Length: 324
Image 1 (cartoon, rainbow, N blue to C red):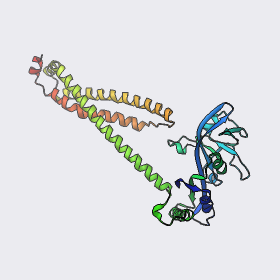
Image 2 (cartoon, rainbow, N blue to C red; image 1 turned 90 degrees about the vertical axis):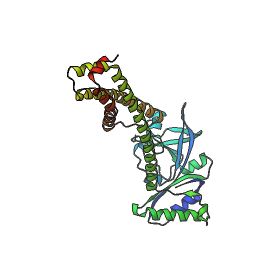
Image 3 (cartoon, one colour; image 1 turned 90 degrees about the horizontal axis):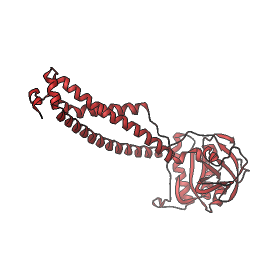
Image 4 (cartoon, helix red, strand yellow; image 1 turned 30 degrees about the vertical axis):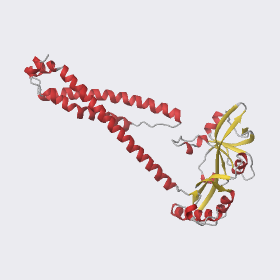
């Protein structure tokens, strides 16, 4: 559930006070950038202020320390990458966030990297929502996260949340709604649609590239046939059959495209590694993708090598031997 600076503590309390079996937990999140400092080391990062039920919603594993109790104040919990960057190896150290002191009460265990920065647990910096409201001088939450009691009650919970927030915002005309509610299923559908669109776009670009590359291979092989006309005539004169010449030139086309495929695989690997380090994600190169690249390269060699090979195989040996 998100909004553009309209969700407040009043809204959060209204949701928390609901006696609704379809809703299990509700947490508020305030996200902003801030400078975190330990000694002389400073980092500008995203800091999230979270309410009490956040920790029961999230599957967070602690390397050291634990989730805060309600009595704690001015605490901070660090992801493994942030703790490493600040050289923090144990809890109870004091760090400065926007020049305000916070005690480290927990360091999260290293989690598997995600390709989406918003879900990278290693980069989390968590403080209490009350501290965040004061630190960032705001009265608004960035979003609320609501956990339904079961998958079957998601739609019911969504309607109850919408009705509650319309009441707290005193909105009677639903066309004037100033917040949005999205379920994890809807979010997944949106991501799949975007991924599908990108896949189609890349497939189109790849198809055009293969067509252009195939035409280039065919032209190279036609030039090769022209330059080796006398050689072809000599081979046919000593007994080479139509099939022998066809196979020879098709194999040459396949080898040419395979060489390009191997170079492409190598460049793709290097680009993937470089982009992963630059953009903080991990590219995955599987055996299947490599075999697919090799197979496509071979297919391009066969398809676009047939015409030059057939042209070579059809040459009249007498005319070919006379060719200058």
